[in-house]
Amino acid sequence: MDPNQQLYAKDTVTRLIELFQTQFGDYFNSYWEDMPLEPPTALEYPALMVQKIEGGAVIGPTSTDEVTETIMIYVFKNTADVVGSTNVKTTTQRELQLLVEGQDPTTLHYRTDSILYVLRTYLTLDQWLIDSDVRVHYGIEKPSNAESNVAFADITMTTQRRVIEQRTG
Image (cartoon, rainbow, N blue to C red; front, side, top):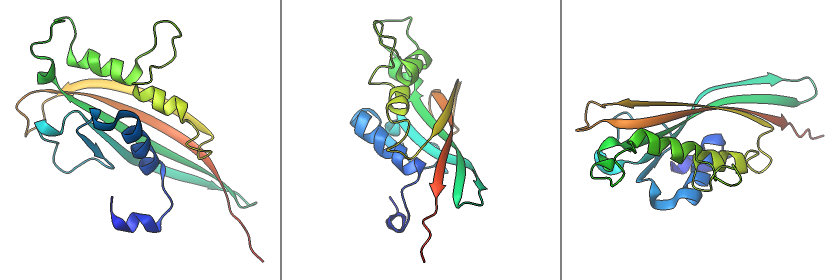
């Protein structure tokens, strides 16, 4: 983390990175607070990146602002990781789908080892958010510096929060 970030309140990106690190620990070889200039190397997969791509505010006359942010969460996994798998019907992309959206077979709640569990469980981010809309897209690509394909999920999370200015005087 950039030491200057301590001069600012934690934003949604920082809060989500902290939640994912707490929940997943060493499962991900790298966590990023933005999209890196160069794609991660094979040793950095699986990787998780959180990036703010859009923001806006409705600035109200009563010092109550409605702040909207669009956050992208990227999950990358090397397709070579499933080579030699005993279950040949499982692909990297399918493993990624289970990691992102996996549900308990009995309760149909998100599994505690899924990305959507973290988003669902901590939806308000300690009273930070009042609403969220989450969309997931999957794909496979071959980054220019990679020897094999990389499966990815990009999760678009649009959030709303209310900011109430504290007036003095």
